[in-house]
Image (cartoon, rainbow, N blue to C red; front, side, top):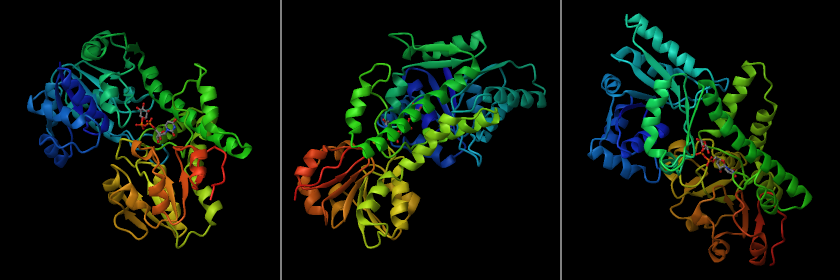
Length: 447
Ligand code: UDX
């Protein structure tokens, strides 16, 4: 099928590349000329495992094309995706400006009937707004009798496994009131719906809400576990044991119940805020969502409380090795990353940071520039050199097996503040390391 995707951000680019790989002919449109120029050279602006080769391959077979020319895109696609960003505006609701601009652009160039698919995460009711925007633009140019459908088709991909998630989705939600649109999307997604039925057709508003409900439920699980971890800390229980104890109940499950230093990224924080705002506008008091958010804000400072309890509130003259800058492993994304709150709090208290991340160093440099108190180190070992303690903010695979010798000889004092519960507290205590983690009893280091 001929498909057009507006927006070459995370969602748009991955979806476009995966659809092209499945045999569809895809054109991607973006207003950013530099981005389109680099994509046309096969340069992918984000780090995502498997994405670059997919883009390269489909670019050379011309199943995937990039242009800034909206008309070419609208002419080409029988199905047109809107996958542009929805940044939060001041009151926390999703800013629909870009989505509605694309809707009007589509209407401006539409010469025949089209199916317009909302892929961006947008509040309930946005499909109606997209429909109105298209209709009024068509009316303006005297083309009001052109037929079109608007579909809500939320994405559920995770950074770091976006290509895999898109290739093997666990569900494909099609929100529409049109049988023809549903059939067209079923055909589009047939290559991804082979072994068992993953397509769920539903009404538009349910599809729109399902996306928010999914992310907010996951954020709730995390905040819940973080609250349990604090209780565990106080009572002397081990949250890792608790996790296994409850995860074995299939009604609870093992996924997304890891305590840590809070969720970050481009989705959870934004979506929780947006749903709180939506609820407020509907006169619903979002008590659970508000607590989920509050707990997360607090959790991002959790390690700092332990650091101050150990070293005192004034950290001037102290240097901290920081492993992990990205909000989670396998991405270079630092949006809403707990590491940022940590670093900023450390700087405020006069400390210096020697940071290492396998992917996010450039991103860190872009955000903070060259500044006092931040040194980016080429290896995890060099980040340790002469530091007063090690802080772990992201559970990268390469941090998971501890090299006791490197840590004890690198650090001034063998102290670790682990925000992701990577190590066995008993083993670290035996090795003479002072080990603070989240929700597990502290065992005094043998010295
Ligand atoms: C999320 C959703 O998972 C995805 O379905 C949606 O489409 C977009 O938002 P993503 O933001 O890429 O994806 O990250 P995810 O893997 O979900 O992790 C989110 C955050 O939660 C990370 O900061 C992670 O460290 C944290 N987390 C996750 C925990 O603290 N504990 C857990 O048990 C799981």
